Image 1 (spheres, helix red, strand yellow):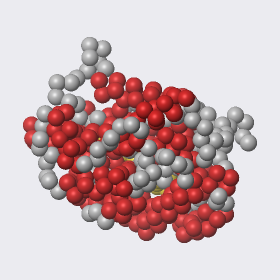
Image 2: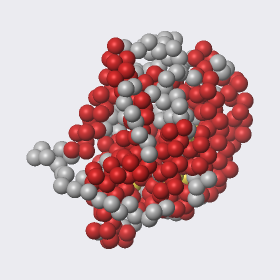
Image 3: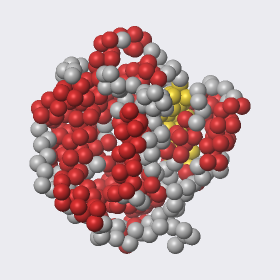
Length: 417
């Protein structure tokens, strides 16, 4: 085991703390209603608004809530979390529609030459996007803002300039750390960390994000059948509104979802510069399913390690096959492929290439910000985990890797596991 690596001995057969058991037991007595009409009513009551924009979102809302309802393995805690998520998304959709009505000039804002990071989860996308976002000329989406992108009417910063949306996010982050403390070593979503913009695409109930919160294959299939050009256009409008509130600067974006949506992505952001990160899918999968299994001690009534790994092997294969198929949609002079094993330690030369492709000057201030971020955020800052793909999930690295020959043939990827 690597020096200092953390081992989760009870990953697939969790031993809950007294606090965890108490929370689950107390919530088990609740009735969690996922009826879309009731969720809409709660969002209307919360915001005092009733215009959701185009009504075409309703079938997607029904499919979204229906997928959560069909997932019988959820604890009541997770049902409540997902219910609150849907109400939050509906409330934010109402606030966005109202903002666009009051300020139609938002539609005239340009999303000019964004840098977009595209790659699998756990492949260095978070590191790269946070690094680029340290350039103060860049507009990015911090986690606190991704959860409540638009303020409630009458809300604003306090006398110290602190946004109440940030305060709420920070409180939730502290509560999450106390319940699942090892998440920080896997993927620390602290309030200021840069988040995926597909979180705000979910205001249109059209992203893959729900798959990370439950076992929702019916939502996956529904999402894959959507016309994503329409929904990426909604995303672009959302980014314009965010620029109006807290801009204007050039955006840096990132999401693994873009791997399978390169057509809509390039048509929506035709002048984007795209950085593709590539990593051994076995390392990606074992990291992702370990993180998910750890969270499942609170989300799921039972841990299903084999079902979990089977789902994400398939899901990662779908993402990568689409990426290989569509990679050439992004022109060579606007994109670069970055192997994970070459990312750590070579960030400055990567940034030089990206900024040249993007037509943006690398100023002394930007270079200093990049170096400062790298110094303050070494790999493994919050600790490292020991992974055991075979022991925990019953799959050997060779067995999993055999599914991904097409990916190794296309990109310069180094075997890690």
